[in-house]
Amino acid sequence: MAKVLVPLADGFEEIEAMAIIDVLNRAGNSVTVAGLFDNEVEGANTGLKVLVNTLLKDVDIDEYDMMVLPGGMPGSEHLAKSELVQEYIKKMNENKKLVGAICAAPWALKEAGVLEGKKHTNYPGFEEKTGKEGYIADQKVVVDGNVLTSRGPGTAICFALEIVRKLNGEETYNQLKEGLLADYC
Image (cartoon, rainbow, N blue to C red; front, side, top):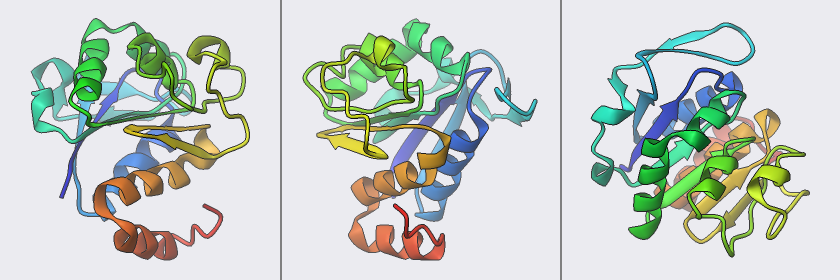
């Protein structure tokens, strides 16, 4: 069982956050959802409010195997501009732990210097924020070493499943993929 941190900021993309949290939990991982600013975090599109049990500032990043950033706006901007998020991304990367981001959130990985020399993808048009070098436009999920990125809401299940493959292995990946009817991944 891996320990995964999913920080949420106001304006997070609901589909992406819920897919990541749900699929990783189904694989048997311990997922901590932490609010960047508050214990109540509002989504970008629906007004959905998520209550989280902890704040990011109260998390010991050394306890985690991976940190995954959902996209959405302005949630991704909050993550990209947060000194704490930047510190955590850098520490995870330096320790060769997994970091992942979807949609506009790879912007935070770029700000932390993690995308340098790495292949990545993001929501179309956000390569202005993430960098055109290494950008791959036509893949749902891009894995380059310890960095996983994905395009957006429609690729969220595939992204979460790829994380499961990295954390939990091929057998768990295949079981979940079949159970979720995600043969398009």
